[in-house]
Figure 1 (cartoon, rainbow, N blue to C red):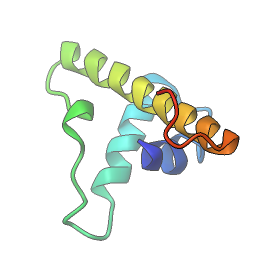
Figure 2 (cartoon, one colour):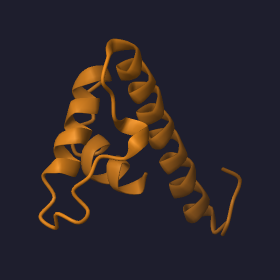
Figure 3 (cartoon, one colour):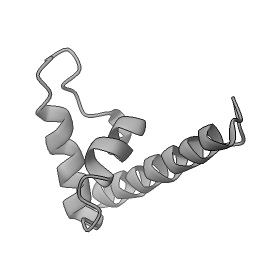
Figure 4 (spheres, rainbow, N blue to C red):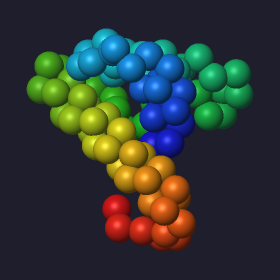
Length: 81
C-alpha cells in the first residue's frame, strides 16, 4: 500500500480513475527485480466489472496508506486503520 501511495499516487497526483490504475500496473510490472514485479491480486482485472472493483481497491490502498502516514506522524504504532 505504501509503495503505491509513495511511488504512484504522490509522484503524479493529477491521475485519477483508470489512468491511476494503469500507472499502478505499470509501476509493478516495471520493477527491476522480477520476483517483485507482480501486480497484487486486489488490483488485477479482466472485465469492466473487475476494473471497477480494482479501482475501488486502489482507492482503499491510498486511503489506508494515508492513515498509516498520519498515525506515524502522530507517533501511534500501531494506530487505528
